[in-house]
Length: 308
Image (cartoon, rainbow, N blue to C red):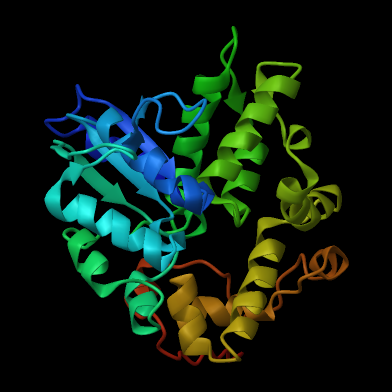
């Protein structure tokens, strides 16, 4: 979800930006080594063990980012709580503690409050961590950011020449659901940089899982030379189906008037039918929002024709 990117942005925009940013994946911590990793260990604590600072000391004057904090065991949570409560750490094998000056940012992909209610997360640690709650939506829920983030990763991973996305490749990226969120997008851009043979990343340069749905939907229509009117008709029917036949709801989703929706629904969806219907029947209505209909959205309008 880009949690670490958000944490880094918080760090970079804070008064601690000149200090270190230290990230640790709590899910990867081994229970028996947790204290040494977080708080450090003194020299000669055991045979062959060299003394070293822990993550808390490494983050002195900066930010400590605890990713996937919900994956810590209850005993590990108790140890973390004491360090956060006192802002003091004691190295393994040490005889005293010393204070640390840092900001702590914790992240998780699960509801901590839900885990508290199920007694899987300590309530005292939850309330200690929940000073400011920032919810980061999944990448598929902020599609307007996909291309900007993608171009950032293109620039970040490029070697010599500048690369850009073709219109079709950009559309495919926006249409994809990104189950792996920002990490998946970064890996995909890194792959595109490595495999691109020109300065433009085309649709065929993207993995099949990304371009599959887009190509399946668009390319056959391009080969059939479908018109925009045929596209609009099929899309209107699809939205109406998803709205369970509720035309008013379909008007709201499509942001068109009832009059325009009716015209789209009357238009044939296939190329053969479209060619047969090239000459509009007398009294037919073009699917275009006019100034007169723009203010009558979702209002049923009867269209009649009289002759003579």
